[in-house]
Image (cartoon, rainbow, N blue to C red):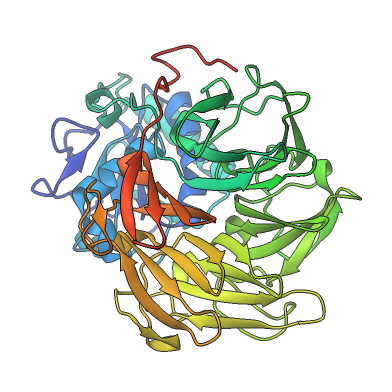
Length: 509
């Protein structure tokens, strides 16, 4: 047998979150420890979180999960930004901020996510990379507990933690709003739809902030029914059918598409089973029978619903007349490959819009804007950005010289693309034909400040929508919606009188 290797100790002088003190392996002796090397931009890392929550609950008296946040993007190195991610994804285990990759290197980690198992005596057991290892980890942890129970080297005792959500409850009227959609409502007016992701609901208002509907109980779940009965789980992108007054929702953490009918005031699931798909190759099937993989944004065009399927790194299409969902573009490989739709590749597509000839995609992990041909235009191209996983920054320019940082939103407003350059805390404008990119809004500071043009601030804006002379922005980490006068570039914060968090007041329709 190979000699056992002592697991490297965890730094005590690094920032720790979700705990009131640094944790050491020496202190945790007698418990199984699971290290999760992650970065909060990564969809694969997010897919691991439900597995960790399952294991934490099952073995709460004998397992300690510790997140080791090893940032990919510059923006992710900021402690406050990591704290916001912990709140957004309801992470309930301690997290150490490993900005210098010291812990990563000590454990010889190669990829996000990687999970490292340590036994109750402090010895390294092994690691797995990628997602989908819940059953394997469950079995290993169970075996370790049994072995060390027999040896008398395990200590069954729950440990208490000082969670960030206890210090900073999500009590604002909106919580991490991720996407926003402004549209004609089909009855002579205009509506604003807000994916209130942190509150697991959809808010519908006028363009001036008068709340008309609250859809969803505010508790995470996958439940169809009336507006007050329905449940969502961190909904994201939306598309509205004005003629039939139907809103389609990417119910991201439910891996489903939902249909909201404003005439009957009901919600139903039209695609996805509620379980994440691990079927990467292009395929098709009946909507409600076909598992999906983190649908992030939607676009309705004629009788098709186009889907930015972030989890499988593809663009999908749902035919609304037949109910069939299928891959439209992308092999499923996480990369940047231009060419035909069949041979193309994307990296966590998170925003989608169109000019009628092409779909435009905010391809977040490669910090690029991509274009996908419609109809007979069987071509995928990169509009701007490096197209490389580590080719990010904050530089205006043309084409491949442009540097964005994890862009999550894109909106076509006549002649231009407006881009939520999320990790640069800015809104940029791109010419879809030349690839020329200019910063239009935001000074890059992580603040909530109204103003004009570059004299205003955002905090990880992730969705935007244009109507007439206005641009609406989901300013995610500021927990607000911003409104921009496009003719003057004046930015103000929209207020919603009477709107409150689900646990503060009861939902109403």
